[in-house]
Image (cartoon, rainbow, N blue to C red):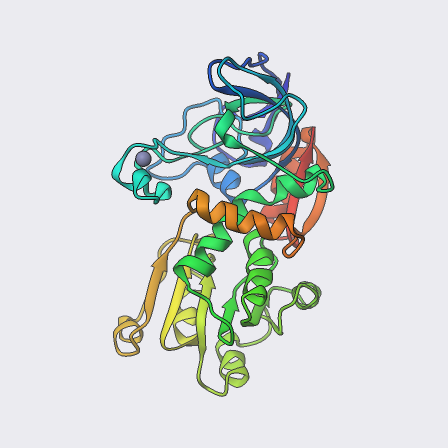
Length: 342
Ligand SMILES: [Zn+2]
């Protein structure tokens, strides 16, 4: 079968179309025929290489996929051949203190497809039967493949860690990122007032079309000043920051006293400078968040299946164009998700 693999870390060009052996399901597994694979920023970190994380090479990247179950292994009865499904993007040991306590994303053996094991940029994949989730017949494969990781991440960040409630003000940086487009919709669904930031007027317009009450062009406007104007100098209740170095200091200044800062990443750098006085004097809460638990995934996918939150797809490209897709995302040319079709 065809797959996209890389043999060394580096620029998008390291992603090569390669023929690999067809997998076949064993006990408790299913063979998933992948129709669409969603790209996440995580895939770019994995391709570039991350300090402290050793990734066995070669590697097939990709955490998100949707497709059809084509074969089932021995002992599988909850899943049927021909079923349309999406892939649960993570697995964990199931027996440690965190897993048994319902906090699988803290499991020491927590794994994401495409990072810790081969992923979804391929025509087929063998996964545990417990990792596929049936999707409605009316949900197209590209939308189903664009959803899981960003829905999971956004739900946990906003609803669980950030505890966003009706009537609160929420600032969402880089609303054009995959997670951003979902956070804007979820925060609105929760009844919050949303201030989004984006790098161009065009992206600001798209953020407002998604439901943001205000959109600030951070390339030419002072975000802190605008937030203070919009909130009558009070500041926002919650800031969602996955940009890191470029935005962290501003995020602290945008919060009200006792406000919550939630972070699930640092696309511009991990090492911001921070004035701790803003944290202790103003009693700011800082919440780390990564991926989420199966309960977070189920809750967020109900919003997808009911049509209340939709994945925003910027482009759909053939699998062979994975390198071009990565290039577009890294150049910040996209608003929403890029999906690969097999
Ligand atoms: Zn565990």
